[in-house]
Image (tube, rainbow, N blue to C red):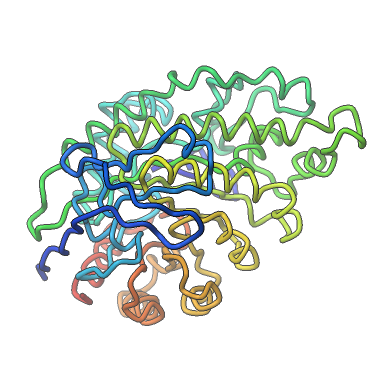
Length: 422
């Protein structure tokens, strides 16, 4: 799954249990102005109905207790901090270069070819989920796909990672970006439709697989657009951020306008995925850890909040994930995201307690632990589970994506340990 890119440039970003009791009605999450939609049809798409006014008001979030095709799956219930029969598990970048089945596909297709061909993207997504026996499948796509319909071409360069051909450095360039061509991204939704149809029936344990769509967060996508690729210090990005405001320079409107355009495109893109059958949307803020708390609040919090609340208004939970974000977690919680992804640097129990258990959490095994001896890996997985202490609202995952050369057997070992732990 090419859902985010590592700091070092990469050519690619990717015991039987009783079924959890499905919920009988739509349930509002806690928070201001959350409302119940009693008119939604639970036998149809199972999406909470929203009016145009509600969709425009990001404080009004209608969230169903079940989503299309999930029927109260343990994954979705964990996102909503509801009781589950066992901890759900899936992995960031669970379809990727560590998996022989994926590499067999890559021998014939480029990364972008896979992303833009629904049949192949669906095949890669399905194969990984079935091979690992996880509780959710995240669609195979890439964070940067929305850049193309906005008018920014990019490519993946071997051993260097993604490169944007014409980085954005001025308000004039930002004004030229398009927001009216998101239909060009429909290939992702068509892939989701195929994955959702494949996993529509309950599995052997009676549970239904969760379907995850995703998009990048405004700050992270902006950093790629401005820097032209991966960055160590984000100098150009921060120059545009700090220069925002008409009194500062002629390009003072560039940052807020870029945020506005990105949010507009990303809301449409997420809506396509939800309509196609995504039960949850994950928002990847891979580079937001480069910001101080003050900078996050001043330049990233508002647009990210608008994006997350708008996605929730579609009737699905949102997972918000960043890397090196321990200091930012309380501010990230203010977005209203249903789940916060934790990297491995912060003990899960301390992070969750610091958030007053007011949000579900996802994580947070160090992905390199998958290279450790079996007994060490078992102990580290047990530590994460012990930190969660069986509290409703924990989704087991890594603190970042599976890296190339990871032994598949180690990933399978983790899945089996989670399932045995109950």
